[in-house]
Amino acid sequence: MPLTDDMKLISVDDHVIEPPHVWSDRLPERYREAGPHVVDGPDDTQAWVWEGRSYPISLQGSPRTRKFRGDGTGDDFHSRAYADMVEGAYDVHERVKAMDEDGVWAQLLFPTFPRFAGTAFLDAEDKELGLLVVQGYNDWMIDEWCGAYPDRFIPMIVTPLWDPAAAAQEIERCAAKGAKAITFPESPVPLGLPSFWTRHWDPVFAAAEATGLPLCMHIGTSGQLVIPSPESDFAVPISLCGLNAMSACADLVYSGMLHRHPGVKIALSEGGSGWVPYLVERMDYTWERTRTSVDKSISPSELFQRHFWSCFISDQFAIDSRHEIGIDKLMWEGDYPHNDSQWPNSRVLLEKAVADVPDDDVRRIVELNARALFDFDA
Image 1: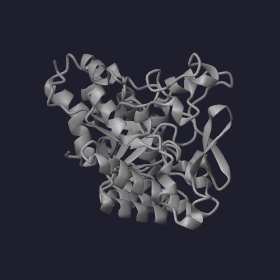
Image 2 (image 1 turned 30 degrees about the horizontal axis):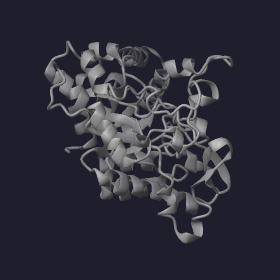
Image 3 (image 1 turned 90 degrees about the vertical axis):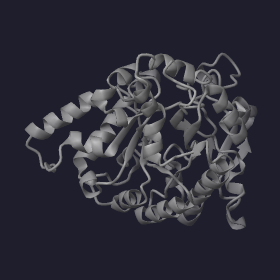
């Protein structure tokens, strides 16, 4: 059996539902009312409210992490209050119990109310408050959530995306506190921000490079998924989410950003991995043959191997193609408590998926690659 007891399964993409006290415990008194706080709504619903704006609670949980009010379809597909979720979604002690049940040793967590890359904080009208809200989340994640079980969680932070210089300072501040990763949009343009092709983001990439913290780019952090038709069911963009990861990868490879920051590390989160051999081959073919103005000093395949890691939840083709992708470029994700999560059977199902894979390769995919990328030795 390839998943031996000494293999500590590390998931590089899970999610946390922030408990209601995160900002009320951390903001100065003058900002308590304007800062994020939870309010009760009609029909047993709840919402986050800050600066007078309402953000209804909405978790797309799995049948095992959602307490459905009805049949789990239609309006009932998403949770609408904390009471609709299992406690492991928002309680760190219950989360560790859920991880133990799932056979998972450690998790890297993306935020929920701030959105996966903290893009909700772009809404801040008062940028001083916005920065305090960013810092409050990061301090909570590092000090309280991860601090409760430092050997079980990899601390990841958000940044004030409206100010790259302030974002760089926040990366440096949090790196000194023990942060191990940064969540960042897969494409800033749909958010109304400058692209990777400009020099706008150089301070962020320079800070990530200097501190060694990887940039984790989760699918959908641009604010959009690929939806081919107005009538497309939600199943269509979810099935195509790998296209977001491919788009981010190609845009960064050709943008020149990676030439200027040769030490930056990027994890393409929840985009799967089976697409990697095709895209890398296609980028090299285009780079060699197409008369464009992109930098021709380093091939796309070299840039991919230098800068990128791909992450999968369930991707048998990626496992079977691990050497074409790069055995050191694959990491596993659990996605708890979302709909793609296989909790509490993650370890059991992953073991079946790697049944014919040599132990050394399995250990790299499920544990060692994540340890090396995130400098996590617990």
